[in-house]
Length: 224
Image 1 (tube, helix red, strand yellow):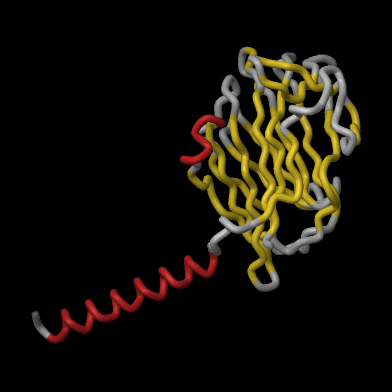
Image 2 (cartoon, rainbow, N blue to C red):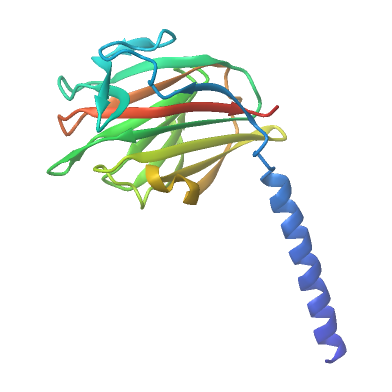
């Protein structure tokens, strides 16, 4: 091996080690994070809602579907229907997750959306037609990631992992079929340059397919 090749190999190896360290710093171990909110609707009577829910608009109720309780939104009328839930978040880093089931009619798909840090905080929205996951702040879209594995006819698991990186925040999005949540692959990362406001989380449903929409397994985690 000549001297030039040895030098090149050394720098490539060093660069690889630095890159690994950088990725480890950007992606801390979250296995010890604690659950501060969890709702699977198991203890909620059918036709009712959890006590902490605040319905913004829409006909929501807990039902039993395929021997499992979940939250249902009626398919009609179509509108911007949503609810607030969980504690008021003020942590620099946190993780919000939920599972959902929509529908499709012709080219019209159910659309799921939500916000973190109050209704005017960081918002997100699925677009099953264009296969995109959109992130916005103050109604201005600043991030798009692929939603290539989305299915409007299967239960899907959505996870938004927010981690502070200096003066900014990094949002990593995971989407998978509910039964394969352990194999979830990150759809992408988006840097958030705005301060995430403190406030409750919100979820919305747009029943463009004019069929019922469903949610389950709402969960919020924060560092211990």
